[in-house]
Length: 471
Image (tube, rainbow, N blue to C red; front, side, top):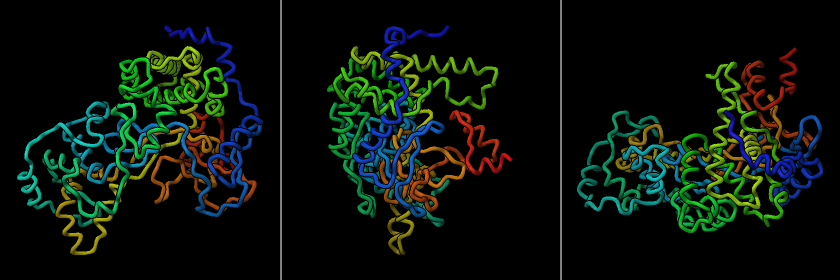
């Protein structure tokens, strides 16, 4: 039986106002302010009746030229990625030190910690205080006397690696061991959450304060949190980690709306969300390959029930009476649907990969000397040494870019792009007045496959490439 959310009926008029399509003038004014505030140049967001919003060039762009860097509205690191990468919870750049990044990953792995075991992950965000007090000097010495081999084909690892001693990893995490040349790859120091939780870590006090003001003061499980119930919030976070971390983005969107202004100005506070293209999540989510068409209705009902369960847990944690419409299933479903349709992968390259490649490129005999220490860690990490920060995020300007199977731009991280911002690069010359397009899918797929994938976004592509191939 379908669950009923009483807020949907009680706040029907307010919900309708929140979901009212934004006028072209409102859209233009909002994005003009956003582009000006962010210092972007050479682009403009326009809206027409056929394709909705689009981003257009106001200047000529050359091939491989940077078009924009777009700061996310909300984003989250995948829970499964938190073992591999310790990053700032606000800007998503790597933090700590090379020793901490490597030691923490190996230590958690040695404990058999899974991505859902958040408590164990949090314990080792920046050290192993309170763990073993054993004198590890003898074991460390014997460890480094072993022959761990060397890399002959770049930063490659041995298939016969053995687990590293726990005491060695603790020394690495706590800074008692320093890896050779790690000073060539400095990372920002770890800053704790101002609310006292162990989930969030930051690269700076400014990032910690910004995240607290935008979302985290309501979504913090620490003692200084403004949440109604830390226990309820923990249950919500656990449910999201076990089912779909898109719920964490929805919680951030609701929290930011509550915290952004006077609660009497709900419509104004809602504006950053109102601009995004939205459909209910259970209506727009793609049907998985293993679900038969005859079971589609049942599948979509299950997705609706999943969202309802998540919403009830969130409501127990941060409900605000003056913002009651935000806790309706209709609004919650549309927020998640907006992320489903518009989100971009959040990717930040790992400095750990850069470090081992640097060691591999050293001249002899420096390389051989360094590898006496580093090769054991590379072997222990295996192919995971190069794992990057991975997550999902909503970028307001990027989300306005329309699709083309022959795009003139793409999301691409350059060597210097080391945080969670979306970077859009021209892949061919773009003339002033031309629409800037990206591909939502693999544009090299056959025509019918491309159209099937794009149907999940609610449209049929009529770009030049599709028009030619359809004939």
